[in-house]
Amino acid sequence: MKLKKGDTVVVIAGKDKGKEGAIAQVFPSDNQVIVSGVNTAKKHQKARAANQQGGIIDRDMPVDASNVMLIHKGKPTRVGYGTDAAGKKVRIAKRTGEVIG
Figure 1 (cartoon, rainbow, N blue to C red):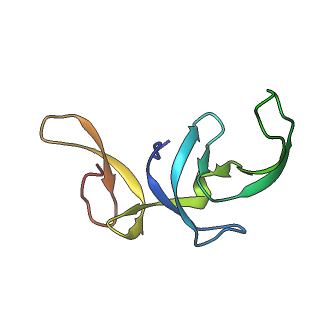
Figure 2: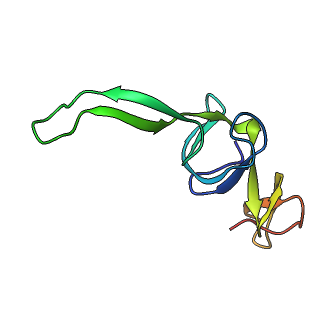
């Protein structure tokens, strides 16, 4: 999977198309990511401890990785792999050819 936790992405398909957010969690085996503020669902939560509040909370649900695109320097781009001068494998932005931080 070419996306990592902390990457800023934009949703390119689905009900939240056009929304941006940071990746909070990655599930490589399922090819899914959780993006903060995207694909939220209501969840009924029971109070587990005496001081914890129960009720209905909003929870971010996973989105397929094919429905998001990485944002590099303010523009969406595809991600590829290459090697740097030291021969280390790095991620490359296909739009500009630059190394992604």
